[in-house]
Amino acid sequence: MRKSLRIDGEGAEVSRRKTLAALDRIETELRPSGYLGDDFTVADLTAAALFSPLVAPPEFPYQLPQRIPQAMTDFRQSLATRPAFLWVLEMYRRHRGPSAAVKDEVTAETEPQ
Image (cartoon, rainbow, N blue to C red; front, side, top):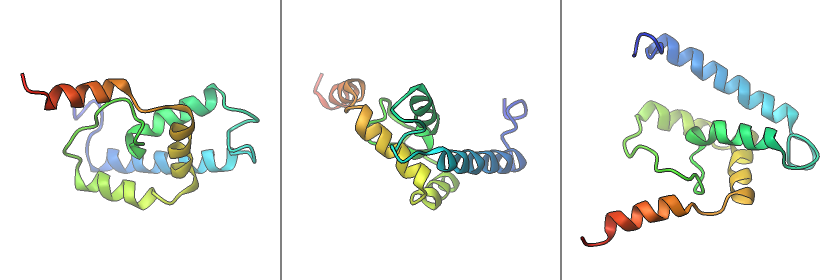
């Protein structure tokens, strides 16, 4: 799997460059409305969803892995002030309430059996 998905240093660098290019694209496409068009559309939903594992908005509906590699944490931190990163957070804040699935999972884990 590591070989077929190019999970190695070179593959990670290619992915990093593609991620930065995608963030650049969002930043150039954002309109004064705060969306990629005049209103919230499937384009906004799709872009925000694709970036959600990187951005990890509080409203993200699934638990992320508890152990995130330091390189990923560092990369995420280096992007945290970019307009596109902040835009993803805002899209989740505006259009996605707290997830009942995450709440149920957390409650189930903490309730005595």
